Image (cartoon, rainbow, N blue to C red; front, side):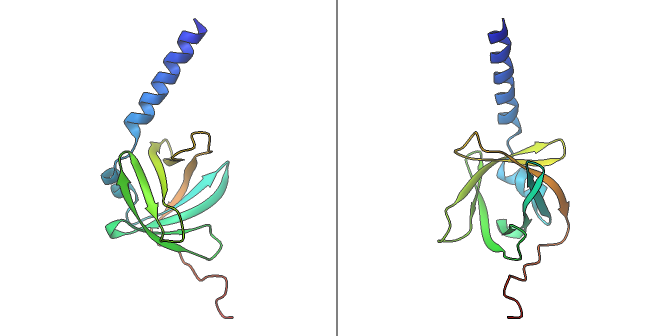
Length: 131
């Protein structure tokens, strides 16, 4: 009985995740024109500004930013920040308090949660400004 309940709950959770995975169009509508601050384990992890034409600006909030673009690949949203960095692909879901992002290829990784959003883009002065 317990195994049956567990399997049903696991199956229901998988279906709910699959049904709520955002498409590229829905992701764009939800993010464009905003800066989303993401948390992991209750701590702010970083932030990303979303612009027209799937352009993005990411920062670990250390003053440095990297610029890139996102694109949809199947049910994944992938981010390409240039030739020096590997493409990062994520599954995005709408959670109760905003976006939830699960890194692709590592189901055991801790998801990122939208902590809050702002209407203005990230400022990126960099660590060496004025030096």
